Every structure is written in C-alpha cells, then in structure tokens.
Amino acid sequence: MHPRDHSQLFAELSTAYAEHSPISARLNEQAQQYLIDGGSHGLRLLLPFPPRIAESKGAWLKDVDGHHILDFWQGHYANILGHNPKVITEALTKALEDRFGLQTGHTDELAIEVAELLCQRTGAEQVRFTTSGALATMYAILLSRAFTGRNVVMKAGGGWHGGQPWALKGIHYGRVGFQEVESAGLPPSVTESVLVTLYNDPEKLREQFRAHGDQIACFILEPFVGVGGFIPVTREFLQTARDLTHEYGAVLILDEIIAGFRFRAGNMGALYGIQPDLTTMGKIVGGGMPVSAVVGRKELLQLASREAEQKVAFSGGTFSAHPASLLAAKVMIRYLVAHEDEIYPRLTELGCKARQTIEAAYASEGILVRCTGFGNDVVPDSSMVMPHFPYDDHYDLNLPHSVQNPEICDVRFRDVVLRVAMLLEDIYTVHGLGSLTTAHGEADIERLGEACRQTARRVKAYWT
Image (cartoon, rainbow, N blue to C red):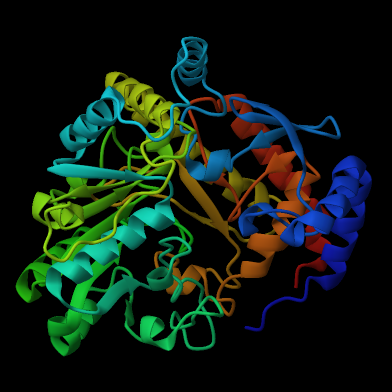
C-alpha cells in the first residue's frame, strides 16, 4: 500500500499549534538565526517547531507559553525516575555547596566507586568512562578492530548506535531495506566495511557469518532495539550471536545505552545468561547527567592502556568521568539497586497499561494501532511504548523491517504528524510515545488515553 498523504492534515495541525504556542513559535524564528534548524539535536527539533521548555519536574514539563506538558520522552529515555528527581538534585546541590563537582580534569574516588558498581551489576572486569553513547560505541568498535585485526563491523538493521562513522548505516528502512548510508561525508571505506544483518533472524546471521566470519571484527547489537521499534532480542538470536562470535573469533558488543538499568538494576544481557565481550552503558546510568561507559573484558579494555603495544586512543574526552556526573551516577545506581524489587515491576505494569490504553483509544475511533515494547519469554513487558499504524492487521510487527517499512506502517504519521497532534493535547512524544518512569501514575495513563482519543477524532477525517 502507498503511504498516506498527510500534507493537508499536517498544515492544519501546524497552524493550530502555532496559535497554541505563539511564544515558542517566535523563539523558534530567533533560534534559526543562530542554530542549525533552531537547535542541536535532530529528534528535539520537531516540525513545525519544538516547545521551548522553562521547567520540568517528575512526569511534567512547563513551556514558555505556560502549558503543562505530560512528557514521555524523558531525557532521551534516560530519566527512569522522571525529571529532576529529589534523590539526585539534593546530592548535586550539597556537593556543589561543599565545593565539589566542577573540578574537571582531576581524579577522585567517585570514578573507582562507580566503576566498581558497574562491574558488580554487569559481570564486567573493567570500565572506561566517556560522555555519550556515540563515543562509547565508537570506542568499543575501535577496541574490537584493534583486538581482532579485522575491519568489518556487523550490526542489525534498525539499530541506532550513535552519530559515529561505523553506526551511520542501516538505521532507517529505505529503498534497499536497511542498507542506506545515513550521512554525507562518510568515506566509502568505512560504510563498505559495515555489514547489516536482520534483527531476530538467526538463520540470516548464520549465513552472513559463514560468508564473512573471518573478516568480522565485531557484532554490535541492541538487546532492546530502540529506533528500530522497541523490540527485545529473542533468546535464540542472542544465543546464536554469542555462539557465532565465539566460533569466528569476533567481539560481541551489547549496546545497552537504552537497555542498561531499564529492565533490571544492571545489564539486560544478564537476563539471557549472556556475557558479551563489551557492553556500552549510558542514559539511565548517568542519573540525568552526561555519563557513558564501555565495560567488559580486561584484555580488550587494556588496549587503551599506556602499556598497550598498539594503543587504542580511548581518551574519553575533557568531561569524561566528570565528578558531578559520576556523583549522579553513583546515587542513581545505588538507588535502583536498593529499590529494584519495587521499581521494575511497577514500570512494567505502567508500560503494559499504556499500550493497552493507546490501542483501545484509537480503536474506539476506528483507527488501527498496534504497540511494541512488549516482552518475550525472557523479558517481561517493558516500560517502553511505541505505537504503530499498520495499513492492515495481518502484519508481524515484531521486526524492525516491518515497523519501519512505510509500505507496511504509516511511519511519517507516527514520527512527524502525531507529535504535533499530541502537543495540541499537551503530551510530548517521540517515536509515537516513549517511556514510562516512576514519576508517572494511573492518572497520567488516563490522560494519555483521552489525548489519543482526541487526536484520533482530529485526524480520522483524513484517514483513508
């Protein structure tokens, strides 16, 4: 089926939104004079313009136009306790008052404490910190290529591993499936060395290892794919990945920038009984501050040491292991560990209710919606929710190449049009919805349901 034409609907929604948020509209015009497209991160710069946020607390934002906005983006899914949780803000406030937190460029006890916590919660042997998920995955790939002496990087279609050279291929579904290069300026020698496989397709994985296994340096995989559709890895696929990387001498990297501490107070790989060679951690780990890390086998991480014969330049950056960030990380990790038994079942329950509420709300207005973010035989239903708008009800939406294929699902409506429609209801979404936090409650799910019903009423006249 050909994608729907939403041009008239989007124009009408944009006009209504400009009337709804005139101060944000004016600030957007000012921002575009000085900032590319008005900002510095593509996902934040929704069309026709983003709301400009003045304050945030828990599940809520307040914008410069005075709207109280129920937020499901929650710091790029980092804020598992909601915005500005007291347990973090009090620790940071006290530290700064005590003249600790901004002594960038020096070592302290916190780096040791947080590294030890990460090793305890992941089974890793050593840790090196940096500041973003993109840097963590880039360094993990550099370590893998140096360790194996090979060039090919394998990833799964739909996986997002940050804005770094080996990650900018196979993210979005295009004319040739997940083989598109996502950025200009990349040297062909890099993009041609990235081999894209199909998520949760063990036979395809075996086939590609048989053909290229002696060239593959690493297989980097999200155990819960993010941009690709909020889909957990199957037990068979992850076990196959571990077996094949062992057999062919490749490094298995689990990219847990999203998954780490989202499903348990530790890494997701442990739920499968899988110990990867390297894991990248970030988002939730930082407690709202910029922290990421590569954790894993000592013999790989030691390639970044001063003693390595062929050293990997994993310096981490000026703000790596930043003391204020690591303080937030220490407090967050300890809090999640101490409250694990109450936090994760509650988040799972909220995610399940949100998915049910969204599907029922749209169904009541005659619009077909199917949500992902559910679990499997290993992972309970998650606190992540992504609604999809399939053209028919018979498609298998448990695969990135289904939910991201515009011939199967109305991808533009979910990612572009719906965001504006929901902002008219004072709901902030990304990828259709986003994540639940401990700050969300039953009343927020009810409000979400009513916003979905109102949005469905607004758009169904254009639904063909």
